[in-house]
Length: 228
Image (cartoon, rainbow, N blue to C red):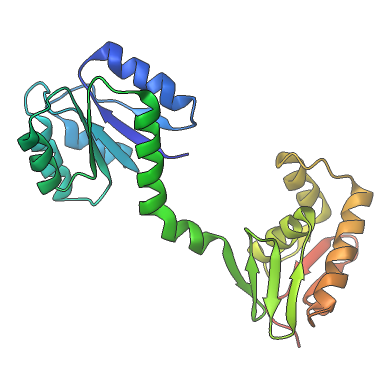
């Protein structure tokens, strides 16, 4: 869940925006003391900041400048001021976008989504690729690839493999696997786990990795870091 810091002194507007953004699974934080914006920013560590220009104590330009001295977090100005110099100033200070009040919420959410995709896209791409036993696991495409070829995995098989390689060279009990699958709402039984592990082994065997998952009788399974 992305964390958004909304620096807005109009409490009714703040509440409305927060409630709407919460519906999109964003966690929205506000500012209690407008002379301590940087303290809130440091404590929250937001993924994106939405800030008004006209604020108590210091204006939004001041806080944008302060934030930019410490962070490259995306910033959107949300203001009723419509003079071109305000938009130019916000961009010169390092803001990513400027939305004029009144605004359509759909426009705000679209801009938030676009900025978050752009800024955090690289990290997301990195997270879907895992390396294990000289093979690459693509979590998004549900495949595992090495020099012998590419194998498609079912969602359950992929999930089981992911759990095992996250604890590679350590025993993962059947109970742990079943519990993790249930928490992920996959509703798997003990017998179903056995079937899925056997299928996973057969798929891995087709690219020479069949021995990379070892059964520890009465204990569970181990994903070995390398094959002898």
